Length: 318
Image 1 (cartoon, rainbow, N blue to C red):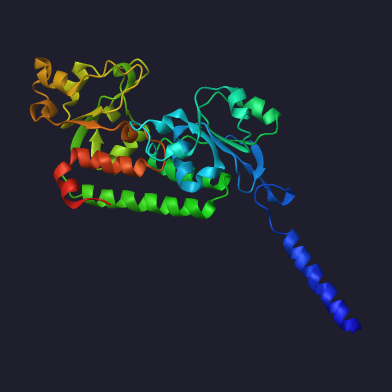
Image 2 (image 1 turned 180 degrees about the vertical axis):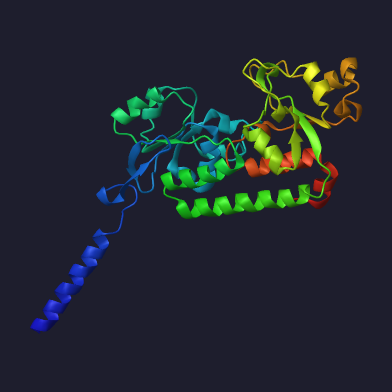
């Protein structure tokens, strides 16, 4: 009998110790972990944050495919805009939307994680850090490969590594399929007139330029040295003589100067340009041109379809 009680006590003690070693989701000392964000800050946060606030459209889109919507406290207002957001049909499931930088509005949501890009003025974040709210600054992607890293990075921050890996693999698979199809086409040159105020958009080193490379397209603006004042003038269009011109289907403040398809086609000064002569002026969604999330894979597919419509519409890429 004595041996029985010793055995029972030992078994209960073992079960208790095993239970204590498991992290508890949503609270408790065992649920916390410390990670380092993209700018070198150590961030202590729950194993699976339950009140996540997204401060950029890129993380809006990624979160919607990484975590249940009841773990998202807020997305940005851009998530509701079908012209630029890939999740506009689903974003209504998240009640609160962030517009601007009101610390009070964000604090009222009681976040246990704020996700924000490294392009923000980071002094804004001091308010939240001073109150002990975890703020994770992620590296803004500028290339297709950067997006893969972003998927893994944000998935780790929200405690969804396995789901993040699945998204990464699907992203990679879809892009490879578009590459294989584009490789069978004679390469065309493309000019996107998509910058605010007619500014040169998609020069070398931009996400758009890298997307063109994966879509089997030659971006004519990758050759120019541009700054914030460089405009896509008629002289540049004539000099570069693109096979296809892309125009954004989505507009916002500052983009009123982007010419329409009709204006380009009727301009006698551009009559010798290949894209004008052949009528190859295509509208492309803002979701494609300005994307910085895993939906870049969709963007690469849309670019390839816009430039090589017969090949891609005939075979499909899904």
